[in-house]
Structure formats: structure tokens, C-alpha cells
Length: 138
Image 1: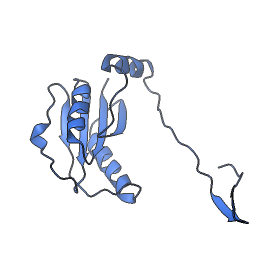
Image 2: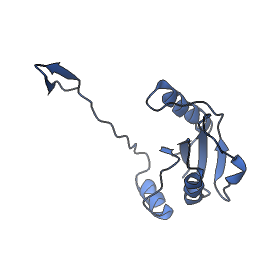
Image 3: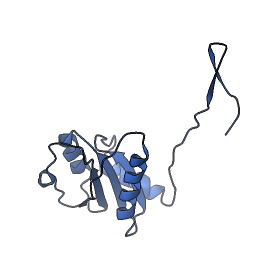
Image 4: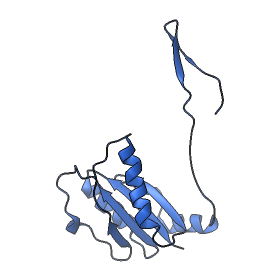
């Protein structure tokens, strides 16, 4: 089973190196985007013994803007050049909560299942100096 880890990072490169070491497994390809605005980044400080490590072209990313989505799409473009059973989009300061063997067993058990989490943000209207939540379902 093949996994693609898509990592968006902009600082704390010591933590990123630690994350890469946790994900360093032969069944993992690790795609990394480093924000173009990041200072002190040196690609030579990162290595993986078993995983394939790919740095994608850098671009400036601003949190909450369309540049964030463009960066995610750039990572997906590179990762989908070959098949992976699962694609994991994470930040450079995330760390796994479970041992790698346990994560692999979980995904093997759930092969073919997509895990997508979403929530609805209901619009707010200001009326009579109070905030009210619209009850319309989306």
C-alpha cells in the first residue's frame, strides 16, 4: 500500500525534520512545499532513508487565501503523477499520534475508504445589536 504525504511548511524546520523522520518508511512518498517567504530553509538538512522525498517548486502562500488552495493543488499535481492508495495533507508542524505500524494497519483495514472532514459555517446577520444564527441547513 502506497501513501503520499503532502506537507505545507513555512517555519520550524527542526519540527519538519522530525516529522519526516517519523514518516520515513518505504511505502511513503513525502511531497514538501516550503513557503517562498520562509527564511533559513536549507534542503540539504532534510533526508529520508526509506521514503521518497520530493520538494515541489516554492510559492508565496498566505493563510486563508486562494494561494493556500493553489499550493494544495500543486502538491496534488506532483503526488498524482503516480498512484497512491491514500493522500494525506498536513502541515510541517504536525506529528503523528500513533506509531507508523499502527497507522499502516488502520489504512490497510480501511483500504478504499475516504476520510474527509467538513463542517458548515452558517452565515450571521446583525439585527438589533444582537448576533443571530440563521437556522437554514446547507
